[in-house]
Image 1 (spheres, one colour):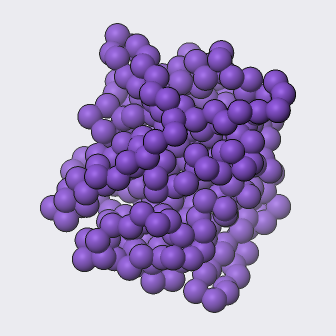
Image 2: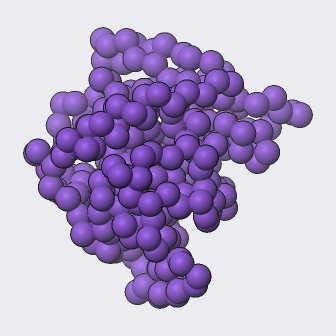
Image 3: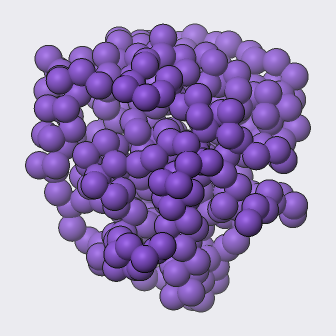
Length: 290
């Protein structure tokens, strides 16, 4: 990863947000933590759960500030958990020891949140920014959590996650990507030890996994949308924001343009992904692995 990306990630640590409670958990003999935001509810009806994964060297607080998901949780009636990656990072290989440990930790977060807040098992979603999106896809591929939907921003699919994806039904998938992203470019990127697939290969992977019959393309004012046609196992969609750099479109949080490229003030990525995710439900036959 280039030096600019290192500085970019360090700057991310300056972002902070409050409004959530920090919860410690021992997973695999290691003490880890997550931030939980569970707005008051009028009744005890089960609510959706969004697992929101920060980028490389980021934090739960930075992810909350960037995404605005905590405020959205109160408006839309869901619960959001922001896990902290070990050393502020995530693994991307579901079959590796560290990848298995991260997936187990996230599965434990889901179990612990479900034990204290009524959560609808068919409405658990994963959201990830940048390398958090790598991990969100690796989590879906691991089969450790029954996900009803997956949405990633400024991200792509790591080759180890793709090759290690357990067989079974697909998962609804949404990708929001800037066309001028210099950190996770649309053409893909090689990091020190793994390849991140290009945008269209990432979308193609999930379209195939979701048994889509093809992809339909539409272009608007500065936005290109690709939508899976007749997807049997999960809606599949991409929003390409023309001229946008590495960031969360519509967020007030922005990285320096000389590192991340142009900031996209529109559209509102949070509204787009919640509109996509909250209409999804997990099927009756989730993939199970040991």
